[in-house]
Image (cartoon, rainbow, N blue to C red):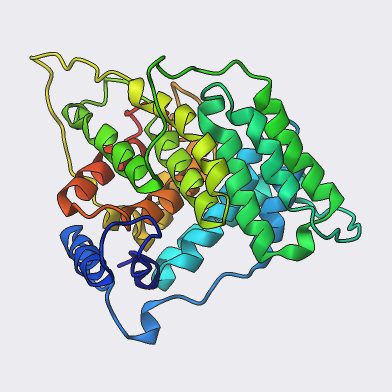
Length: 356
């Protein structure tokens, strides 16, 4: 089965209050508690061959070619899929399935992924991407945090593929943040304050997610935007990890907006069809090769006839799994992690469950 990158989880976060030994014990408990067998292993065969780093160039190119900020999803999804496979010891069948869907995205959006004429690499331009992000973060939450999500992921990719730091890539990436900065923000409560540290933000996001446990098994009730609550949280964490701690803190107030969604009332007579969605079900080759899944994913999204269309696998599924895997290593409570996973992944495994 596929699972987590143990080498990643064993890196104690810089702002954690746990000692290294405590962190090791707790993260090992999370892996066991989530019921993912075969993760802690020394067998070289347990991990698939790494994907080509060419996917970084493909993803950045598609983001740069996006005509609107929403179209940047496809390139960002490919970047997230690459890192999901690179960062974690996934088995060969799972990686092959994820890669097939990445290739399907690139085929359907072939024009957006077509290579650009290469200009010269310009030194010291990478900071422009994060600098352009600041106006999109001020005053609240815009576009569910997409400016942060896109800029954070693109910056990571540019660091790993410095040959892509060219004007034809950098300038459009900055333009995505500028587009989003023009949108009217959702404002946090007047008395809202930033988090004391990134760890508190992560734990608060998971505490907020598990409030919605009563909705499990009730697909008729629309969900709040769980997907971007998770991807936005990881994006801010990633900014801090890359050395942009001050910038990440500027995003805390906007992140607080995610916490304002009320838990919908579940009718007393409503039937419950709850099934626990374990991460191992999704991080499995059979999930990615399932004919029903691939048929839906590779057709256009439609809220009535194809609610799990390309909205899911052409962008959001890659990004939510990438982000959720990274954040789980910061949650010490295995039961909370397991519950949050079930709530989050229900949206991706049951087409009748709607919401962001």
